[in-house]
Length: 425
Image (cartoon, rainbow, N blue to C red; front, side, top):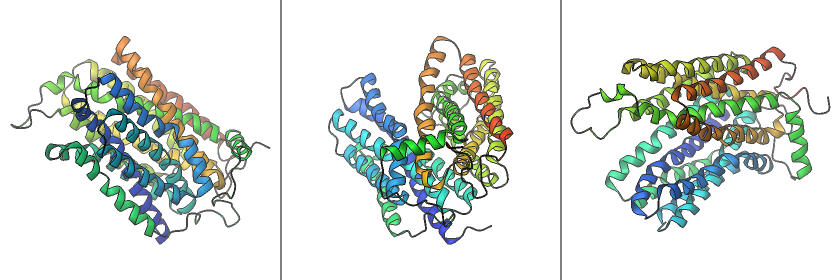
């Protein structure tokens, strides 16, 4: 079924936003290498500076969701695009570590509002949610892959400050496109449902909506997304380092002139590219498979893949099994995302959709980042086997929670995808 005009307009707008969030996000580590050489500052201190930028990206999702419900999703996405572009212009003009810290913190604050606002817009405005979630995810993966690639390539020819400024050009173009885009942000909800911006925002309303959400099936969704985030962040953070240390990489001959390129990096980028196919497949399947069933199945696969890395990384197998395993991991690691995004839309009321996605991405990017600390301790003091066992356990717990949703059936969901059970039941 072809998308209608409103769905296409929202898809184009949110795809641009999603791609650019990750375009900026993944270019920052490329600049870090240059900044360490440019400024007389140690790695530890610069690591803290970069962390200050990434921290608001996850922690700001909840207030971002609240603001989306208050002021409207399109407005928040435009503010996000403007803030991210402005932050990189600040970086372009930076001549000290303090200015870089200011630019990165501004980026984190601006970027944090995208996911709750963009996904709330899709959930209330799009009729064919599954297809648009799929394309939205693909756009995000494209940004993840292209951000570091373009930044690294431009740095070969240009000063880092010029590159930072050039990277803002797509953001500025997206703002222009968004200002002209016309669509109905509540086209997919019932006429009598309140899905527009709230005229007033009070602490009691936020607390009331939160109580309603966490007295419903959304509480289970929140926790299972937390474990998905633990799996996602832990795997993507440490897999490149693990791949670099495999003996199979040493035996891969590269053509003359490419000796400085690490094969492990290409395998990792390939994983992200395969993730685009996973996003599309997962999104299309959400219209045929219930979120609970899809989440249960994919969590089981992710747990098995985590365990499969134990023999592959410990026994010195050849390059082909590693590439295949990474490709399969990339597919399912991103295929799960449209399912939990759709689950949020199914188990929450339209008027709290921004708040719902705010909590969702607080779980995904905020709480999920704890696995970076866990993973570092496990890899440093125990072993890779223990690390992958931990990762598999995260998926196993997520699968059990998704199974609980599956067993409960549709008793939490009404015909229009809003809550049937709430705090007053």
